[in-house]
Length: 631
Image (tube, rainbow, N blue to C red; front, side):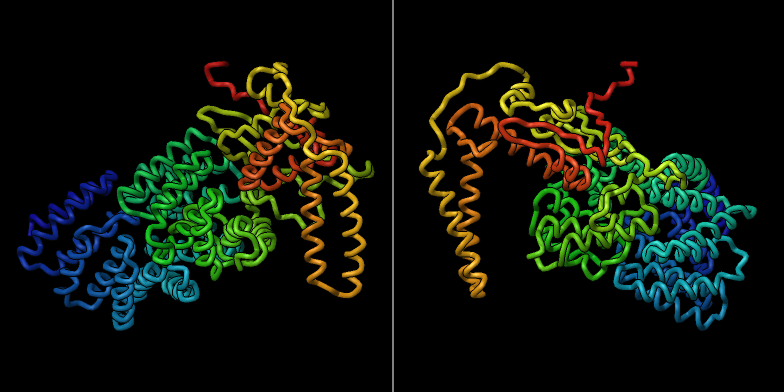
């Protein structure tokens, strides 16, 4: 027996030193020694410690087999209950919720026979893990209440920690901010108790999540550093995963592209190595934010595999599908977008969080908005604008500032969007104050990636010719710039004045007159068809009218003057207009509010200009960012 005790002591020392792998090896050694002497109690002791060395989502290896062996030879009901609960947790952490559910039910049944609140709390914790999928929310809420009752009078801080974390998770899922605050406070109080360093780690990390959700980056930085410091002193197998999640979220919100690039690579590598879809799906959204759309698209298609309907409805189902919908909608993968939207719709109104509520990933309605904005209302998922409104309402209610900005849709119809960082001004007799001046980025960077959007909520956009045109115009507010001159300037040879070629007018005067006469006739005919309620005739007339208007628009310029076919000016006008439109479409995918402002203030044609809107004043940051070495 000395060998078993020695191996367990070495395992405890390794855990205390934060060496989880060494601790696992020592527990397995102790289990083998106990098995050799037929000591079922020592086998159970060693086996019960093994799940604490697992990392979430990683294959459990031999841990479930050893637990099951100990369960099979255990006689005492409390030990069998705890081993069944540990088996359930091992399979949950290993990504097999269905197998976990079998042992979770056994643990619940055995706990009822034992009648010990501490044993019951352990079984309920396992049952919650096994019912972590999106369809189990009602049952999960019921079990959380039972766990809270069972843990209420326990002195073991680990038992109460479990209850608070589960209640916090269900509160975040339902966006119950009152319950979120209450559980965060409960974690703070529990962390202040003696000998509760592990609780302090969880309290700091969940506070950091809340700070990131509400856009308090300075506070988040303090809490992330606190989480890092506390985690370094703990044998917590998931500490690095927690830190990576928080750091990546912070980098995304702050526009720290170097850090986000490192995290994207780390997420992709870990997701691939361990076969964890949610981690790889998050990586795809990071690559998208960095402007590496091809890499994001490739990852999304790999993860979609034989079809999204095969995605396991487990703890990270909503996170995986939401991330894939975001990437698919942005990359024009309509089939994948539609499949993902259909899977998400039953969960509208719910938040998207990763395992254990380490980071907040928005609300389902936001992703449905992105999907149906891409697909259109004809796709059968309702109005994209209504999904946007619902998501905006949820973000405003919980104070998710960065998410509000990204959605840019929390305002009431017809009202101006207020500056999200502003605070209500104190009442005074000075009359209405001038609108706050917003700092907006339209800034080229390295590796063909632009920084676009309001300060504090910028996003990465891949280089497009239209972005260069927009930057040139916003740098010259109110100044008309000929399309040809704009094209030449962006191409790097301003004022070159390429010689004109001219193939004549697109439509001669006689044809233009005929088109306009026919439009007048159509207008008269429409009045008659409307009076007779002749819907079919109205539709035909409207179709013809639109075709004529399109032809006239392409053949005439400012003031209705005929355009000339084949001229260098005409080719430049068309190219600039198309490039700016493409750039605005791309900006709209990540910042609809900014796209709307630019569409309202940038005018294209033979002459282009940016006309600032006095009701939405902005200071534009368009220069190349300075490197640290530049001083």
